Image (cartoon, rainbow, N blue to C red; front, side, top):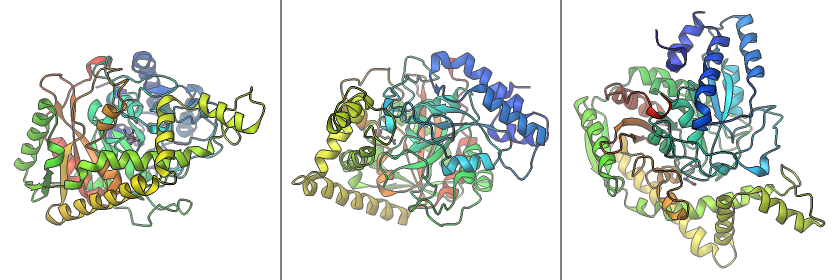
Length: 488
Ligand code: GLN
């Protein structure tokens, strides 16, 4: 019998439903694992105390398994930019260090209604700005395969936590790749749904026209079930679509690659490291063996994706972050004597360097005289990128691309080169500009580094079921990665 913490989410869910495992035992197994590994991994922000979680688990056990609740007793972790009532939600920032929300995010409400036990908040780059989880004000998260390397970001805490068996699944957010890229670098599954598929009510905003909440897990059906629970209409969130939710779990279980046309966009297959290219091509060859048809396609405007994204997302961030003024939320500088001084001092102390850089960038591109040259142009490029995808999806059902150009890099490597970090999101961010869904599955281990390589699949809007079906069919037939060496 494998240890409890290593079971898949669906396996533990079924064991809980049958009464073979109690909610208290499942939560305790995860806490033991967190205690054993997190000192070196740093995936968890210690805002949720074990005692209150075990109380909730015990209350579930006292009432007994409830088959109407699809996640009854399952321990799940939540990225710390998503509000969980009565526990701090910091978004990895000093400015929110003392912020304790008095309500749950919509997705957390849904998890709780489904019977899940929220056991931890996971680390992230401050305000989800970054690709390495080195930009948290509180700690650095490391890669479970090699503790000297980054886990990717900004949902690096969620990806590392799930990969290291600290929880059975986790929520993340994805503005420019923050679920799919860390899933790729850590070797787990991560799905970012269509813009509007999942409510952002109670999620700390980064780029409001780009942000989506999604799921990370160790297997595709596990991620499908999490998405199933959190997807759906929320009248409190104006961008949340009233589109019916498909049966994602059934799609993941029954999915096939037979006759599925997978487009291979050449722009995303140029410029990757040799080992990333090889692992992803091997996975595609496997997809072909399973009946998929590969189609060469081009997304010509995605080469401007990085430039457009790093104009539009800081612009939105600079306005979203204006609310952190030392008055309404979080940190307030005590030494300031007049209002402007208080704003300046609170924001200078509260925001880290990368966040300040984004605010400056965003304020600049929105300022009079520059708006047309930068913001407006980037918005036009965004439209062209969406048209590229629309054209590609006329000829194929899904697209496939590496999740990142390289495997995980050493901590601190790009410390003085923000643009190098920005480029790490080049394989993922165009999809957010187009508002479409994407998912990363582990393709294999890189031949040179021995580190995970992720393959992304993209689908047309609201094509999550197709994505999960094909992704599950392929992932089942790829060689398993094995146990991550850094936390074995
Ligand atoms: N790396 C990208 C950025 O820094 C994406 C982050 C995200 O998806 N939240 O903005």
